[in-house]
Amino acid sequence: MRLKEIAARVKDDFVDNLRAALVGPIAKVCGILKKFPNIADPGADRILLFSECAAVAAVPSNCPHVLVRLQRGQERENYGVTYREAQQAIKVEAPATFDARMRAYLLLKHHGQEVCKRTKPKCERCCVKTICACFSRKQRGRSVFCWF
Image (tube, helix red, strand yellow):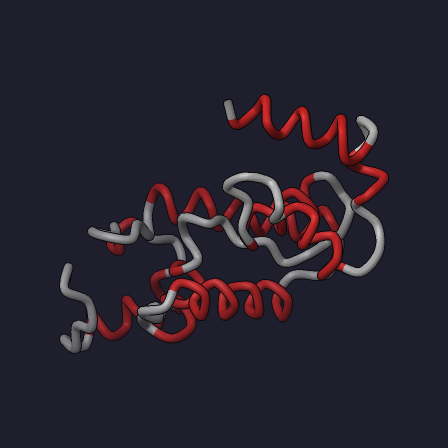
């Protein structure tokens, strides 16, 4: 049902050419994308990045906590704040090119799904634990998560 709605909207509102509408200021383009069902900031960012419309700092929607844990030792309680902090980390660390930002996105997604899971992270298997603020706190015995 959702795919039919999206296809109809692309056909009717964009004359079968959504890509042509995805030009201009990022805020405008994100606004267009977020009018589609189930598309929020993370989805809009991912579409812009992987369609090569804009080299935005996209963060996988299911693991913005990874970068924030690495830097701060714990994620924020508010998803939006955590997402924006992770985005900022990518902006600072990854060059603003499609290749670099896509690679950052894919590596972050893999790490978040396989090692740095939201609950029960596998810190002992982590390849970046020596620079991770979360792991450092755990090692010092100052657990900040209920799952430690």
